[in-house]
Image (cartoon, rainbow, N blue to C red; front, side, top):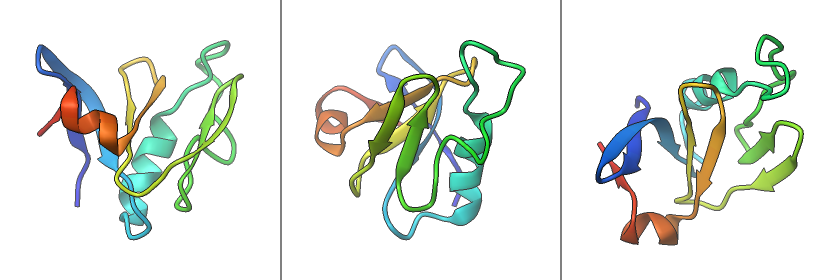
Amino acid sequence: MALNTFGTAANDSLSALQWDEVSAVADVALIAAGIKDDLNPASPLVPGGFTKNGMLYVPNRGVLKLRPGDWVAIDDTGWPVLVSAVSKLSLWVSA
């Protein structure tokens, strides 16, 4: 599997993954590698901003636990975006 593009109907420029327990390790790693520290973008997050078990580490903010079907995306600056599977159905688009 590969990452999707994701966003609103007007702009779907985010790289994204619809997460569940069987998401490909390589896709999770791509999202994790893309997440940057907004206070120091040159500094990578260690061990990474996203894990196979659905833990999203939001730089300088805290940790969020994804539920199956949730979307995790990153913008071109490396900022993570979490969208509930329920919310995705009404507002967001993916390709």
